[in-house]
Image (cartoon, rainbow, N blue to C red; front, side, top):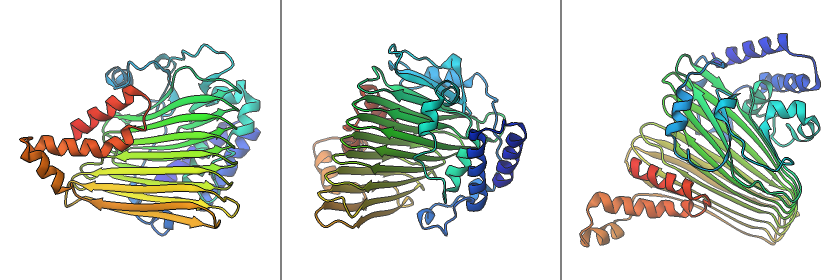
Length: 428
């Protein structure tokens, strides 16, 4: 049914749209979507991830929302964080909930739809240049029908003073909602930015959020990028982030998946120059029957680059997680240092993890390692703590907090670390 919804939505758009270059990009993307369709378990990259429960449902794109979004933000963690806020409800910009505090007028923090008109040269130079569409049905669907999203542009030698907080709220209080945000982030030479991308939900009807992020980082620049996923109810999310790095850049990316019925994260790095540093960290804590899938890929295409990847899972109840990480070392990428680990703790005999770390190496002078572990809490430290009078529940929390600390220490925003500690405390 979702397929029919998408076709109907594009036909409506087609009848109303102005025939411009932008329209033709959307039209080409829709043709690719029709050719490719939704991925199935027959695709190797989707082997453990079945979209049938999602594609059999009916969804609508809508601007409908109620005051719940304001209430949700007022209660939310990080509400007191000093940040530039861009709030989108069902993929549409909410000006009354947003607040831009950046004072440097050369730095652009706006919506993508505004940028397309007011900063068309920048928009056209970067939009749809980094995220693959061919053979990627969900990316093609987003390109054809995305609603709106954030546009962040940091010029040469500039620094965004406060984090940019992109908040996506899916409100399915009245109907099943399809939401397709899209964000474009461009950081020019010797510049710096901190970005927090977050997703929340309202309502009990099913919702599907299909996010695409394009990130371009020019030479000698640095980005701190944090992703927080905290959707309740029957929420499905596919999130595709492509980061394109030029030489001498440093990216620290942390994904915290706290809840969601179905979450698929696709995180791809491409190093397009020497001396790049790509840091990928993630923590997921599914409970109930939640399903969380992290797919990552790091392309080392030039010499003397470094990547470090660590994803950790705390699995509860009947939850299922997938980790599939690929490091690709290209022929010319000599002196590559690349590390990848996936570690999981099962707190229930009914929880499941499918993990597949991968290395493909075509250069001969490299240092690359990868590995995965799945197990239960170690009995020896538990015995040690219990023998010193610490109750079992408290000892268990101490060990799990220590397990999560490897990820928490990668976060450079103190308020976000506190949030993570609170979520761990609530869940455990």
